[in-house]
Length: 222
Image 1: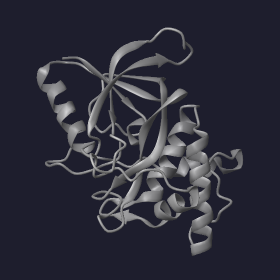
Image 2: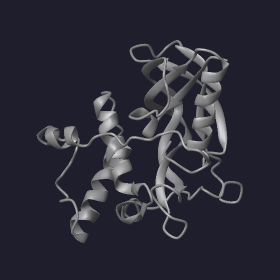
Image 3: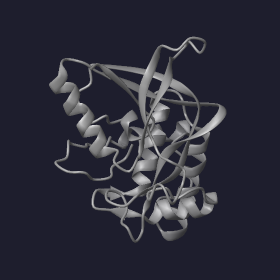
Image 4: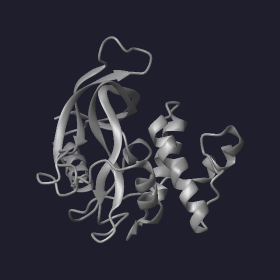
């Protein structure tokens, strides 16, 4: 069982499992949204964090990284079990076409696994749904859990997409709104915009979060 998995959140900068091949590219007709709760990692049940999931949207393009795992049943099984623990708040595995950078006509891969979530608050207890940008920013700016704060997840995603050369306007807008909130409440100054060339040193100073395989199910970043 050789498989490919598409990462569009924290998997972009930190897959957390042994990878045999990584390819930068995109999937079509999906876009990132910060509509999913994280209550065990960067948030709590009382004050959930917001992490990104995918929303079907015709004509959209979502950039990220596809990872291949091969090398025998045991290795492949271990990688999938790790991903299922890490992505346990995502209740669906969707198969998608993956397009390699520089070729948008023919899929580079078909049947690539991507972890997604049902956009229904009854069927999926982790689904928060959309909210005004300002409300999401305040939630992200103030949420934290056993493994860190919510804003770091967003800022690291912003940096990871910058590093692969495919920034996401929605992520940038949300990150900048979070900076405004942090400036108001005494955190990071609002002008610290990672997408600005003048803040290259700030981008380079944000080291990726290290995640290790976990013994039991816990909600982590996708």
